[in-house]
Length: 297
View 1 (tube, rainbow, N blue to C red):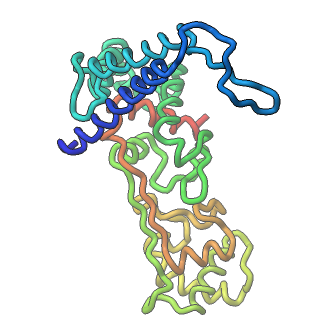
View 2: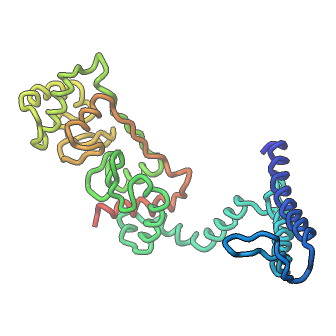
View 3: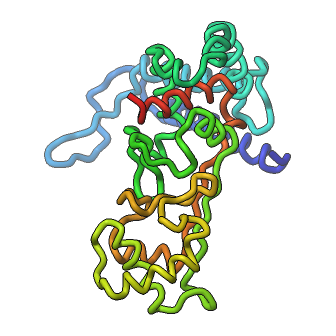
């Protein structure tokens, strides 16, 4: 934080506290008596009159104590710009201290889990409870709390994997992340509108849902030229490329004609962020076991 903003924040904070103190002092000074009185302020509303009585002492001292407490707090803890406080406390320091305590408490257990194979670890109830919390904190925002995914985010509870569902492949996904790219085919010189319609009908024909059988038949050749390199000649995908299986009626971006047409025309971009910079190797091992267990009872 620059010196200017540090001073700016300090002035606002201290000005607020001393402003409250001045308001209390000015109000107290303007009172005409220190005891309760029958004298009114000279106005009434709906038959109710306001008495000219002093502030209750308990209220006055509580307000004053609050101002003193605020100044003491700001002296001990950060709150005045770049001033770190006499105690030297910081959020980062507090986090590091808590992490050290956690490592001391769970380090041995984490080390044990890290050395345990993923399929075996998936049978450990304690590890799975830890994995569930790790998933909720790091994965549920995209894949959902039940891990069933949503549009653009894979369902992790079935046996359909974009990049492979073996323990090694799941670990590689978590450690390094994944970058999926479905190139747009509707931009010349790729496909024209007729060819897009043909290939969409051909893909829908895998599940018997084509709109035009003649277009679907013509789309086989278009698919072989433009799509088979990634999805395979049989349309069953390629986990090495993250190309989905188009024959199992499991869709990442929707299965209607319009959804598939949009995918073909404009392409899709997917990213699974790497977790190695956020989680330890042991935590990734536990998380991989949890994800593995979701589709392997």
